[in-house]
Length: 192
Image (cartoon, rainbow, N blue to C red; front, side):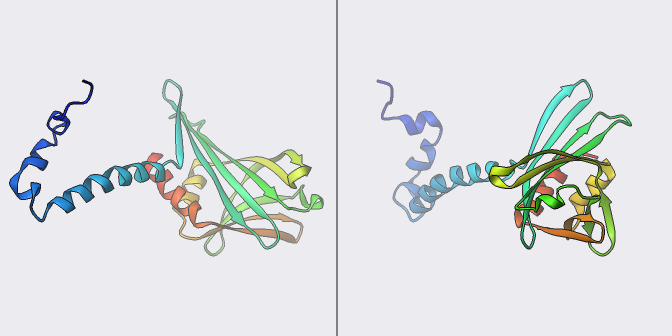
């Protein structure tokens, strides 16, 4: 027989169900509840920390990918993700890819993009390049670079916005709550 009547003892939990104070006592409902809740809590805890993926690239080279987060503007939205390649040398860099949705085509070529942290402290995105425009969903996708120090400042910021500007006009995008949760997980996973 695959399952015996002694499965509780074989699994190591028999002492809980055969102890006189649990078998028929007031603690039995509590123990059953704990066995039902603990596995679910463990699964939810694992899913909540899946904000960063780590890849082994080469000897002394790790790459961290922070999943996209949504930022909302007045008439458009942005999704931003980060890729940090840590090579334990001077060539470490961070790629910041972002997509703009419902953004006017006339504004797809802008002069600068940056994160505004608190007051007037900024983290600029360098070498911003348009990757593609997808007309069916009104999406334009960009890539850019930023320094690891700038990435660390973005991850540590209490409040920030993402801004793109062309001339004297621009659009500001505010992050969702999920962004701050991802940044907290990223700070724990990525060692600078």
